[in-house]
Image (cartoon, rainbow, N blue to C red):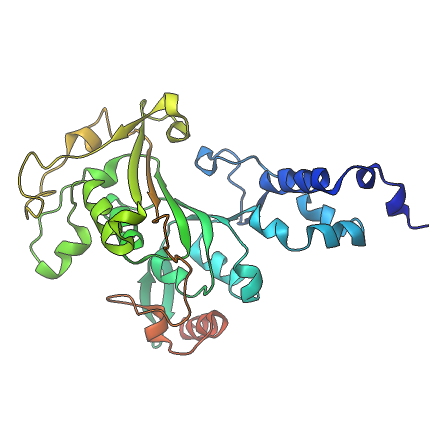
Length: 319
């Protein structure tokens, strides 16, 4: 007789076994990085034991019972957008659509276009290459300058799909306090700050509809340098910026630093912007052949090409 039938595991009801499987994989991080950020509280997940997916290989019955459901429970971690594309783009669309949790560093994707022209793409454009993606939660670990982080998050809120909830986490508060005086009108919409989360809330309501109840909230740690503070109600506070009674469209907002977010005693406080898509009738799946992004779009630059083909062309151009 097959040894699987002697296992105590199969003497308990399937519903209990299924709960065990879910519990195991919900505490699992599959990291595709040069180093696993075990001390980074921004992940807010347990570190997975070595070979955590070995359960899938224990016997045919366990494998059949779990099937592909594990994809909806584990957290996939990537330390840059390129590793995310390298790993996820070859996955069959049916399996990609089952993934629910991804964490990725918010670095730009740097590509070398022929003939040796370096081009940066933000995460919103990277995700456009992953058709059928429909995450329950996307966590972006902010990096780079204040201005870069603000612009990337702004683009994700305006044009991003493939996620139901976006958590953007920065180790400090500078992205909501930097000064930018717009001399070039073509750059104002990219870099000039707006009162938040009021502005982003309006953007989401325009995208998903007021009555679908999208939401944007800003949480900040109460103490400077306290990593992971934004995940606990007792160590964080809800923040909102004001434009001091001026019309919402005031053009000079953000031309001066906001001391509440960028002064020496305040800047070091961890920040999380939580964005939730509308809850009623909103299709947030990343669609094949969705409209091009305004400005640079990888799909426009490489029409009809897969990520493997794009990567090969850019690698060749770099040498």
